[in-house]
Image 1: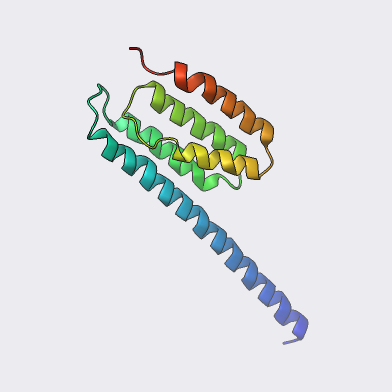
Image 2: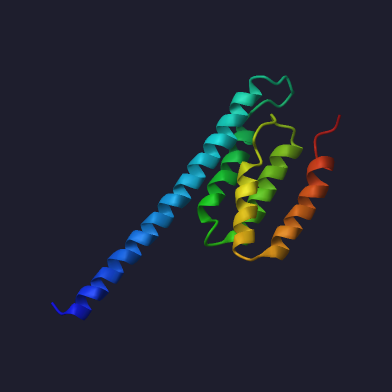
Length: 138
């Protein structure tokens, strides 16, 4: 085996390790975000007396927001759109309050780190209008 061949082989191995490390970081982000967002909201809902509580649709919306984060580095802007839509839907339907904004924060930071400032600004404007005035009546 020549030295050049060994270096190419080492390069392939290091690339696979880097991809695996990135996948582990993404999986950890999804797991921690899910634990805080879904788990924290489930805990918070036990201390709330609202009409909707923490139903199946609410859980589904939070899980969609969290699972979208798995694709945040490959498709940052579409992931932000999905997370904003799921989080705003959850919020406007009046489900239990809790740390539901964690996936939104992660998606927003990812979009900014990827340099998509316009998309970040649009999502902030939509959130500024939608979250305070888009909640359930009364």
